[in-house]
Amino acid sequence: MPGRLRDPQRGRDLPSVQHTDAAGPPSETPARSATASGAVGQEDAPAADDSAAPGAADGTGPLTGTTVLVPRSPERAEPLAARLRAQGATVLVSPAIERAPIEDTAAMDAAVADLAHGAFAWVVVTSVNAIDELTASAARRGLTLAALAGPSGAGGAADSAGPGTRWAAVGPATRGALEAVGVRVDLEATVNSARGLLAAFDALTDQLSEAHRAEPRATSDNSSETTASRRVLVPQGDLAKPTMAEGLRERGWDVHVVTAYRTVSHALSPEVVEAWRAGAVDVVVLTSGSVAREVAAQLGVDPHVAGVAIGEPTAEAAHAVGLRIDAVAERATDEALAVAVLRVGAELSEAHRGIPRLSSDDESPLAGPGPAGAASSGHTLASPAPARTGTPASPAHLSEAHQALPRPSSDGPTPTEGRNLP
Image 1 (tube, helix red, strand yellow):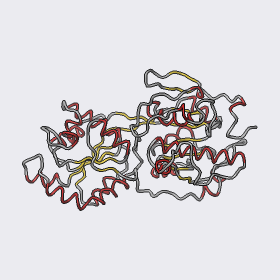
Image 2: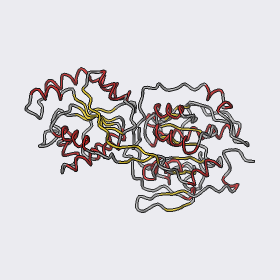
Image 3: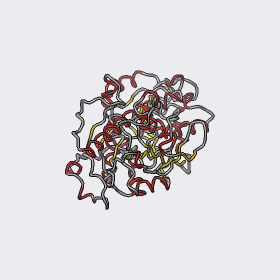
Image 4: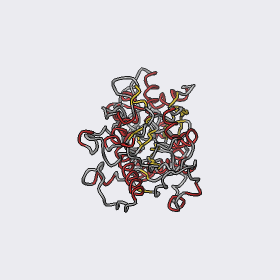
């Protein structure tokens, strides 16, 4: 019986999966026949150029024989899927969660109305989904989000957020989404998490206080002026952790949280379920805590499937439901996720062949020369589990390295980059 990283020439047939082109509806295509196409989605993670990547021309690469599950919608998964296919991987794509509208938009619309009148010093955005809902609420007022935020996001226009309102983003994809709709971002977290954004606020506390005291407000009401200088709008999903809001309150901000959208379960495709149960999935990419919980609930826990998390809070959520985590991406981008998958795939392949593991200094085919590649290298958290033989091992039979994994702290929210839901 072949090991878990099977030679594709042995004739393994994987279920077909839905592949969505940017130009057309989903179609049934064999998993390995999908080609990289122009991606729709993350501004910070463009699709890879498959023609120049290992495995693009001859169907081989460092991930050849490795099947990766990306439980995201096709349009959100495509940039990452294209990078992985370029390295030879078979990629299964199927969303595990989806965004649903809130039933009553009154609170959201009221918050946006306040924003339009300069009632907030900051708008703190931790999800691309929240940007969509802010945009929709502004449209109900007959405005674009850019017009509401003011010229170039700086405020000052009629019916805009005013010159004192600033915008904060949790990471590069959220920043990109705001800038794509014409909103200037004044603060971005270095580490993609609520804790990272709180740290960024800490670093700016003194100068922000001086700036807010010196700048005129859009409203002529002096009492509102004083209140607005400490008010923060936090639009988020219904399952978001309170870390951001509580952290801001502890720092003296007057926080107004509004639910912008709901996160609901989406049934994984029968093909993905079949592949998982057949032991055909080698790696699963987890892009939010909600995705991790849905994968565990819908597919069950298989200790032989290596996990790659988009951030520490997602890794924590995965551990909480019993999923294995082997690596956490250095940044919440498709490039960093792809590099982390590549390293995990290489370690699985080495374990299968019985050869020494790569040192951390070895260059990844996905990481270009210089600092950019190094910044996205991903760090390993666990050794791969043994190959599947018969009944899957119970958690008690996992490697000691996996059992001894350091757990991320519990006070961080699920990353929300690139439509990551809480």
